[in-house]
Length: 73
Image (tube, rainbow, N blue to C red; front, side, top):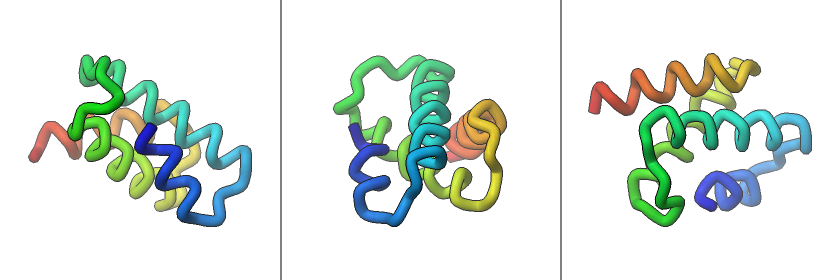
């Protein structure tokens, strides 16, 4: 999964990693992306990671912001 690659490259604690993975999965479901190998899934991972690292802790809020940002592209 793309999100795991990002997490491996950064010093992320287990709680934060769990939160980002949950937000990533929720965002993929919200966008209707089932193929985790789809290049769009990588874009989702990067956006979720970016938003999650900005200080927002709630996976649902990260998901909502990621969907809005990705729909604007």
